[in-house]
Length: 116
Image (cartoon, rainbow, N blue to C red; front, top):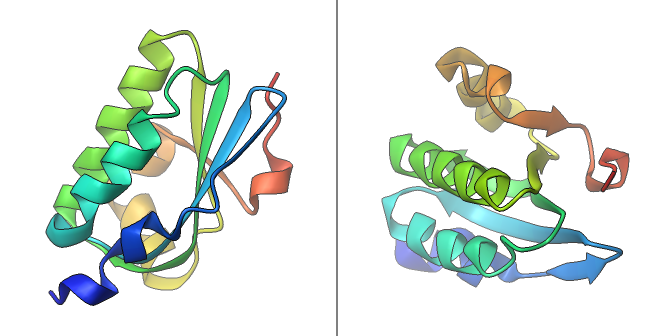
């Protein structure tokens, strides 16, 4: 649970283009990194579509899952959509096993997400 590994300040490659906001996260999406990821993603909640690119995320726990669910609910409450992209390995399995894959849209890569 080392903070320097945690979400690397959400290594934000945040880009907004045509109401599509993409934030690339890296490190661990756990209790130590979830707050920073939430802060950065919530700042984009007004976009029509917010995508969290998790390709650089090496692990996650319940705190990270709760954070993403809160963000999804907030974005949707504001009339937008929320999606996750780039999940692989143990992170993808965690989302599938927890049932989050049925709640939050998952895409292979951010470019596969449409802002429509």
